[in-house]
Length: 271
Image (cartoon, rainbow, N blue to C red):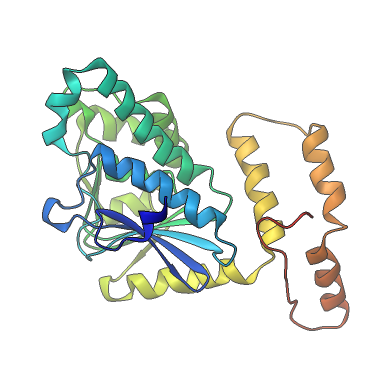
């Protein structure tokens, strides 16, 4: 994992203060995702999730105007002819996407230009998606005769609803940023010259709140997304013990003293 910060690689991680960035860096191929790149995304998520100073993970491209054109089609013929390679590729994609979806820290996809196929698969597994007006979205298995995994399909359905997911998947069509915003595929649509700044403003908002609270809320929401509908002993314990946390004590004290709270809990602390 030590080379994941190598900024000459096709995928690398970078830490900018409280922000950890996962950078897709294959501009000559419009960031088409090779199997090796899927592995590096998973490793980058792990590295940034473990970094004590990082509070928000941002998935972006090294070049504006090209988020990701999808899977590297040039690999598909080789992958199709080798059962072991097919399974390894499936696991690599799943590990990258599952890593983003279940990261302990909030994740934001910063999208400019094409966000298609596997690129869209990465984006929909982030907590939030910010895009500019040049963004285009599509999930296109029907155009090349393959079938997407259940997890990817469910993630899309959860975001845009059954009918919109069917429309995208059955036709393989590309949609523009306005339509993507209208169906809930993206959270915020901004101008190209404001995309980076808008992502950072929102990321700073996330960085300013209690990371203890945010971590617990993410865990609770993931339980709900996984199908849990009522409390169990583990979720009950999260609620009860939260009152004893260092951030809760500071938050209550700051409220009573009418001042801004100074939260100190970070990932890896015991409470």
